[in-house]
Length: 245
Image 1 (cartoon, rainbow, N blue to C red):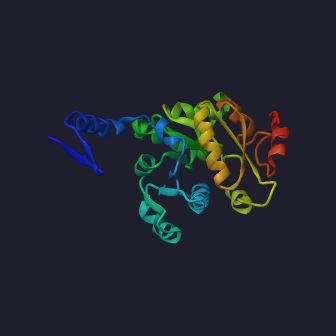
Image 2 (cartoon, rainbow, N blue to C red):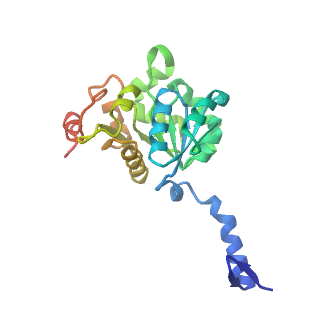
Image 3 (cartoon, rainbow, N blue to C red):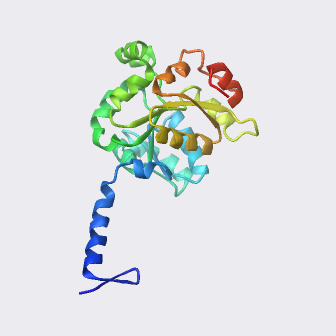
């Protein structure tokens, strides 16, 4: 018995091997898929999620915006065209080669618990900030343990990179793709390949990525820190944050 596949003639053994490979491929870890992300899941399509999603669509990415009320995103998707779609957070996480988290920080524990399996191994761009008046007890945890460690705790198993948290969305809207020198965006993460993915996403959104260090270094540009809120070039930001040129 012989099988034809894309015009190539295969023996029974070859066909079985091809079938086995096809069945096993979806089980490969997200690591193999996330280094060249072309599909981005956005969890939280508010100001920051909507702004960055627009920029990535402009750069040629497919973006899945999500909300607990996805019907409210219909106008956004219609405006942005065929590379945009909308649905639930679970659908966005499943869709994305990389995922942007842009929801109120108090939602992280529930978000991480509900999507633990889907987040495992996924590159997560963590843009959230803890605000005491809004986020309550988890703000105190961030103050005690650090923003990077807290995100890693509640998004357990994800390859977390802190990015896009150090400025207001209006600053990103204003400066994306501006002439040189481009605005610098600080990033921090423990997984080197995930950091490289984040660097690509920052660059393609129209900014210059500045790797500050491992995830614990995210405290240096967290909200309320001296490294927060700077609209400066990469060399200037490196000087402010003590990063080697």
